[in-house]
Length: 237
Image (cartoon, rainbow, N blue to C red; front, side):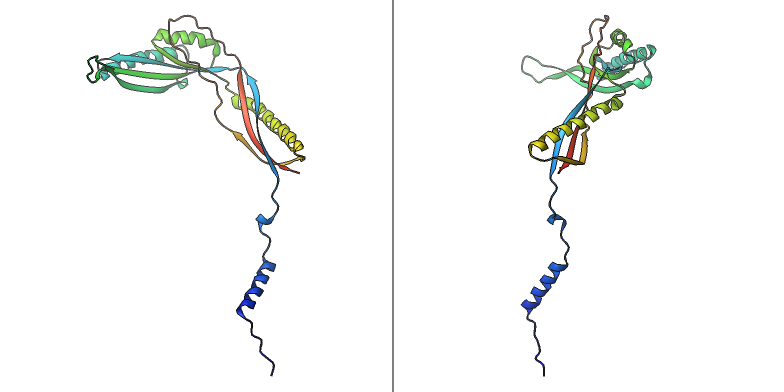
């Protein structure tokens, strides 16, 4: 009679572990990692502004909120109506801010401040598509009753298209920098892995103004700098 072979538990577990090791494919994390280089760079394009935005408003004060609102409404209707009469399209006039606030007195005897009246402010943003008319329009705003001109910003209407040259320049600058750094480290730049563009607002900065005597306003549009910034990652050979 042939002897019976008995597998002990420890022997069975060892055999099972060996079988699992032989049949399990290599994991992705076991592969060697790609060597990468990431560089950020900017590119620039230049264009002459062809339009502008003006932020103007009317402020009125009175003893009551109702009276201040009525006075402000009358003034603002005159301003908006006058702008339309000068040729500004209604779609280019937009209310940008409206505010009603109390006006306080501060007694010298130490008693608590009290409300002495109300102040109502109304602002509109005006898009000026013809820069030749900008100086005259600023004069017109003041003569119509706008007692605040909060800002003037020049714009390039086709900025997105013109910015394409800045994008190309940014990628070229990133490539040049990556090649320089890779060569210094004894490597070479290979294929692109990712490209990302920063999309933060880079428009013109407003120029603060204050309405004064209505005189001829000299306006110089200058040149706008359009910036594009990219971050590119390459593999290294």
